[in-house]
Amino acid sequence: MLNFKVNEDRCIRCGKCITDCPPMCISMQESDFPVIQDENKCMRCQHCLAVCPTAAISIMGADPDNSIELKYELPTAHSMEALIKGRRSVRKYKKKALEEKTIRRLLETSFHAPTGVNAQGVFFTATTTAEATEELRKEIYAKVGKLLSNSDYDENDMRFQYMNMSHKAYTNHGMDIILRDAPHILIASAPKTVPLPKEDCLIALTTFDLLAQSMGVGSLWDGMLKWCVDDFFPELGQKLGVPEDHQIGYTMVFGHPAVQYHRTVQRTPPEFNLVSKL
Image 1 (cartoon, rainbow, N blue to C red):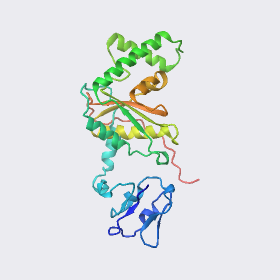
Image 2 (image 1 turned 180 degrees about the horizontal axis):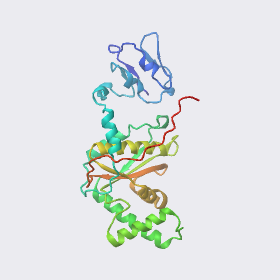
Image 3 (image 1 turned 45 degrees about the horizontal axis):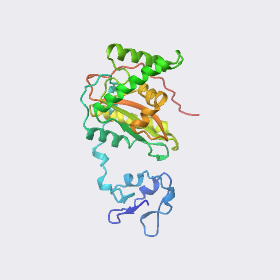
Image 4 (image 1 turned 180 degrees about the vertical axis):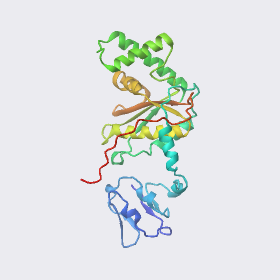
């Protein structure tokens, strides 16, 4: 049930909910108030709730008064530019874990990232304690050691080259290249049945990455961790709680950074293809 409701005392009949509805399933009826006639067409995107200037629309039990008013909260273009250009891949972390409420806030907000056909199927799996991550770290390196000693692998495969290098660094020098000694790991997965599982995960993790940096939390896109939980040892993903029918989009590590950056870097000029007419 959509439970689409219009507060008639607030509704000014402006029709914005009708014109902005992506599947065009809202119409104005004889009552002169918006209604949804065919609920099966609704995408559950809540555009109607968001676009209403008087907070007159409720849908799926969502109270518009509990939403954040955007006119006071949006960052400036300059602050967004500084965030995007100033974010760094953090490879040095403090051992102290984040508070669980901080992790929950990061994940709950990142779930608002757009998804294909508004599938909203992204599933986050994260460790909440440094102890859990340390156990995972030990298990990963033990499995990598067995993989390298027992498998007939292609030495030209870049994945094995990185695994071999990482295992030697951990065994000989106590250096953790795979998880970078971070106190938390993050896996984004989505059902294989949604239209764009991998892409949805990447968008959600990008949202997480930027939000984390804005909150003083360091993060790192971790391809080697993805190899471990997806390519080489999928049983680790299952042990952590990733649903078996999900596709893993990508993985990250995150936590309190042990390094502070003071300015943006300067990239080489980007190349554009700007099309003014066909």
